[in-house]
Image (tube, rainbow, N blue to C red; front, side, top):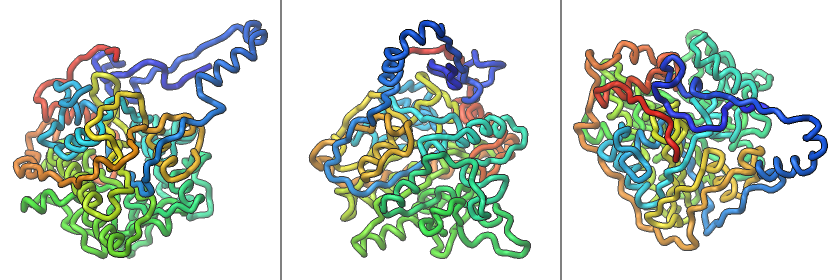
Length: 479
């Protein structure tokens, strides 16, 4: 029996092969064998043991739903637990890059609702991360080609519905990157759960071979047919030149090259575009049961000259989270809504427990106030939680056996509204200088691409630019 990802924790440290700290290269698979004669004579017992260990034959335990009927699912980019929550219980303060002063909203939400200090991304990088985060699986094509793409050998980023620069489903072809069980939106639509998509699996027409002379900066279009009528065409795709929040606008900060607005509504940020729709939901007294929202700027542009610093981009992203939670918590929908937030992957980042450990948030009036939950949870468990709350079946074996996030009480005792915390202007307005550490390397990163060859070095760029010292050499730690 083989296991491609191995069975031990992984940490980015100086013992990695050739000093390579990339998450994919930290993995060491295992191969196990068993004596045939023994296996044959004990087949029934061994089969039952395997079934029990893998929890096959019975889905994950049910989840108490105290009254939640709306879910807002936010996916962000590439941070470890210690990156953000290293200054909270369960973290290592020496490894914290974006502490409370940079991410006050996420800190306040984790402390008020539930601190999940043992949550893990199921993926290594964004290529498979967006598959795991939306489908609870990455199929064979994705798993094999992620390594080729991340090796810098020219393979396209074929992991969010586009294959070789096209949209196969719109050309009458199968998407080889789609998992057999489909995606969360397929599951929702199949079971008549209303849906709205803000930024998942979309792009501009130019990415899909728009004809010469066609204006390509008009609207976002989906890469999957199922999302054709669900996508907000004015919610900007992954683009580091467009704000997640109103942080810079509020402080009057002018950022060179930053888009001032986008879309038919002239939205100044991703939050503002979402908020326009949400205000309409409030007026009409109806809101989609499931909303998919992408806030991506915490990926950062590294130290590229003239761009916002990593701390400033993460702060912008944090404020978007705070603004969205404030809007929901001060509305008629607050009592029956869960907001869940995770990173698509941790990008093999620095964490004293494991390179997959990542910040995650569950926000609802029914979350028991001020709790810390150190039970093991992961991406599949987050998806299983969403499914159980919305009455959806699992998409595959991974979410079927994953533990849902059992953080809810029976009463809405955490009902007070939340007010977004405005980050200090000195952080919001930070701009990278020409002499910033590895600024030239950072400038090679695409503003439209979650990952590229240089992005594999982004952990080093973030660490050195913020900590002003080399990455720490850390041994393997046991939890």
